[in-house]
Length: 73
Image (cartoon, rainbow, N blue to C red):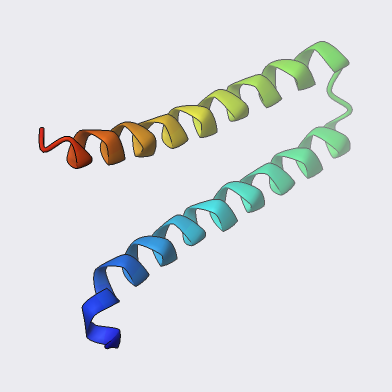
C-alpha cells in the first residue's frame, strides 16, 4: 500500500522541505537585519523581496498543478 503513494509522499516531503527552508531563510534574514541596525525602509524592501520570491514559488506550484490536471503537460 505504501508503494502506491510513494510519489505523493515524496512530493509532500519536498514541499515540506521548501517550507522549512524558506522559514530558516526568513529567520536568518531577520537576525541579520536586527544585528545590522538596518533602517525601516531597507527592512521593508528586504521583506518585500523575500515575500515576492516565496509568492512566485507558490504560484509556480499552483500553475503546475492546474497545468497537469488539465492534461496540458
